[in-house]
Length: 318
Ligand SMILES: C[S@@+](CC[C@H](N)C(=O)[O-])C[C@H]1O[C@@H](n2cnc3c(N)ncnc32)[C@H](O)[C@@H]1O
Image (tube, rainbow, N blue to C red; front, side):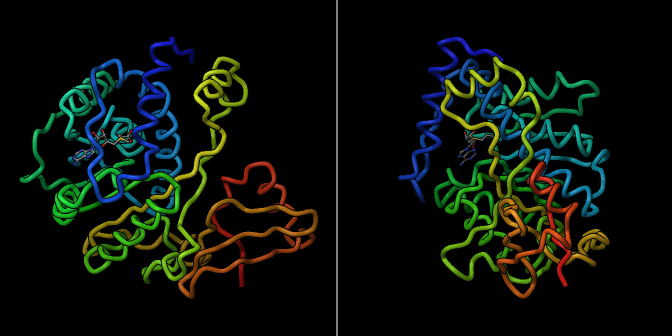
């Protein structure tokens, strides 16, 4: 992956829009100017988001979320359409409907989906008022919505059978996502990542937020062009913090996977292997807890946490 000067400038401009945290509660003005903005985004920032989706989707699969080969999937705020593409690769889809307030983005996302091998039927949407998707995807959108956008999304969620939201791993958006999750529990069951159906304990204190790290792909370390490109963008591609939730209407929710029933905890952030101990923060139905395991009792887990910290999802706790 190498970027031209033009692509680099486009990404820098977009990042300034995304990173601007001053807009909470106000709509972020439309920033897509043309297909070249979307193509530069798709090569870089969307690729990072795709790695986060891969991690979230793997966890959903392990928690029993079934395939979606016969389902209608809607990607809300689709941008270049990375969420739908990752979902289709992992779970399949009969039809994908793309919606973004930006028409160039909707068209770009549809074009990319149609180019997939074994592409699903693809439909660009101008409005979501009458939509009732089987699976609703929302990716890195929550932080950009004003009140009207939030109302529109909430109404769409209320007409969806399954909702998957993948958002940045920062405190502000992750807490927003947990608040939405709690509000939806009246009619939905949390399939992943939650190890329980109680209120989100990360909201109990202002200091916590539910977030994880996705494993970066090897080329981030080994491909010198990539290393240079991420450096030029000022992005640490090895750290992929994200928050996510997968909710399914309670009437059709899959039975809890055995892993969840027996383990009953979900590690937040990354585990911290010290010389003799393994420290981590975990979520349980009783609340969040900082726990410490002895390396001598959990040698293999300690080594995994050291080598591949993002792969450790839960701890063997009493
Ligand atoms: C950060 S981008 C994420 C794009 C894509 N979902 C992804 O994960 O790469 C946020 C997207 O949300 C769209 N968006 C923002 N507000 C929206 C709204 N009220 N309705 C529909 N789309 C919206 C933007 O146009 C943009 O494409």
